[in-house]
Amino acid sequence: MRPIRRKQFPENLRRLVKEEDYPGLDVFICTADPFREPPINVVNTALSLMAYDYPTDKISVYVSDDGGSALTLFAFMEAAKFASYWLPFCRENNLMERSPKEYFASNYNSCSPTKIEKIKTMYENMKVKVENAVERGEISEEYITNDEERKAFSKWTDGFTSIDHPAVIQVILDKSKDKDITGNLMPSLIYVSRQKSKTSPHHFKAGALNVLDINSIVRDGGACFAILKGLHF
Image (cartoon, rainbow, N blue to C red; front, side, top):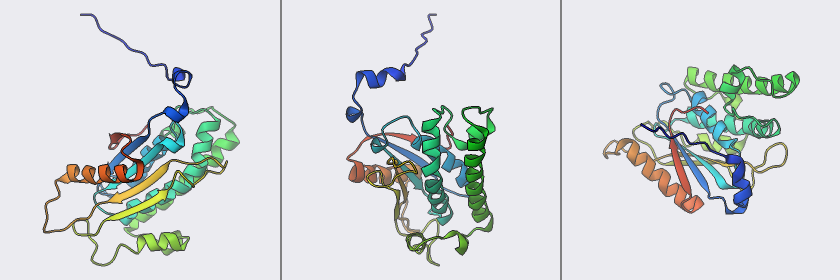
């Protein structure tokens, strides 16, 4: 046997290819139940992806919530606010571990303790809000800070269930206009919950991915894509 060991040299990418020629990257994250798959864990996956060392105008993160839960949408709205601080923090300190959960659990020494404690406090505050909402099974009015958020959550009417509901598509971040605290554009973050009806079969995960494919093609012209579920980087 002759095992082959390959090594990657990402630092050569910019030397060989101009950034404007990088392919677009659409990443699909699939979840279905905020009680079986805690939203804060899925949020950590998304934050890690959004902090990729890659041109932000080339990245779109799509979250497929097949359970159609307002709790999941709330978690990602809170994650988007935190991302405006987290992405610059990762960039300025050249972090390799870009999942906040994993980073704060490690023996980090990338920058001053004061800066670390500040960003960690922000993460913990976000985590508490998300976990409190899931524990209560509802989003407290005090957590809704503006009319845009109120409008988004108004889609969850009394007749809305995980197996019978209209399609919900919410652009949480738009890479053409939304910026972080340093003025840099952030990747797109899009929440998608496909339409469901009790009278129709939905082909389970395949049906959800079909909807994501369509949204990706319409918004980003069919960029290269990857599918993730339950992964934390």
